[in-house]
Image (tube, rainbow, N blue to C red; front, side, top):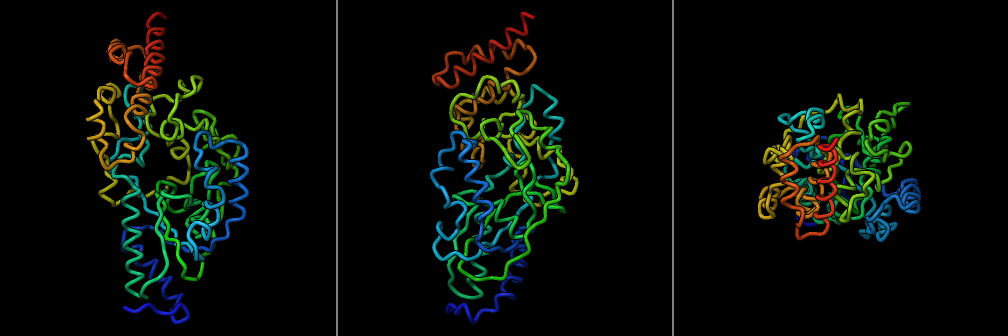
Length: 360
């Protein structure tokens, strides 16, 4: 159909339609906001000035493109923010896995299909529906794929509030969900921003294994296990390795203790069902994977992005944190001369830890 002129579009009706279409496409909540992120930008710049982004140089390199949507995509005046729940029904209890040192804990968001692909595809379908209704319009879809302050935008769009652990919380759904956005040039009516309900609770600060939540609403990525096991491509600081425990990809501790997650709902998305028994895998089995096996078993998964060497690095650290086990010592000794200097260094650290325990 021919494109309608913006002043010929019933924008209020279109906004209602967008939310209905979003629900039909599997989003649990869709909201709309403007592009004014002044407060979030000040928070971002202070975080960068304190070097709390660690080795994530792209955070500083993108600068204010992250907090000024119109600079990233010219013509943007509104952002359609959408969330999709990801916690499946059939998943091993996180607390049980964390208490089993010989098992590996993988952040629950990464157990199924790569969420980037799932959400971007749904957002594109939402844009297609809008286009079928009004004709061509300016838009671009994002899901953790560009310099976007997605949590700040979602908060402004009424999807929830940013908690003291820096994750978005919804009072009816907790925090086990993904976010995605459509930047658009449609001047749609905006929603009421979310209201903070954290109150005096500090459970997330108390639960963080590495004290990465240095103050309410302030996370130092350099201490965060998610950063250390996913974003960092170098050696994990020695003093933090024992605190990582058996977490080999990400960390959910701050969400696990959040009281609002008692309202979380199981996802109906088959794509987020755990693959390859990764919800409670054996550490030694993961450490035995060849690179070919790693690539095959993580195909279509967010885990693959860290690469094989970092995967072995993470598993080696976890093995170093397990009580003495002769089978673990043998597995570590088999990789002590690994081709990767990164892997070798962490394997030798883990082996020394195991042997120290045996001597004690």
